[in-house]
Length: 115
Image (spheres, rainbow, N blue to C red):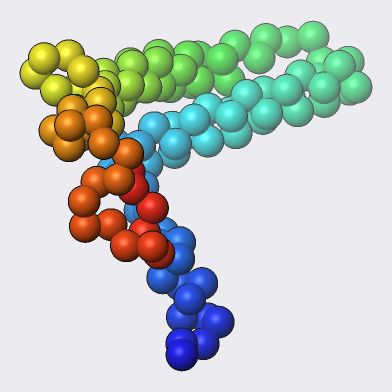
């Protein structure tokens, strides 16, 4: 009989984030940090009655926001293309069609539910 730690480890394997998804995630974090920093600068400028422009902060983060929108749209298109067959159906639908739409996919054991 296996120990509890081994059962937990084999029950839920970790999924690694892909490179493209990681790039999108990092860009979102960078943009969020920039927006939070801009908010802090705006609050400080009001508190200290600074009336000069804060445009330099906006100019830095505008291209990052543009790049983020382009990268995220490409990530969605890539994931959609990877999860759709040539006939236009999804991967799960194609797998179910290949198995004849049976609920139990053949060699599945009691410990492994059908997909």
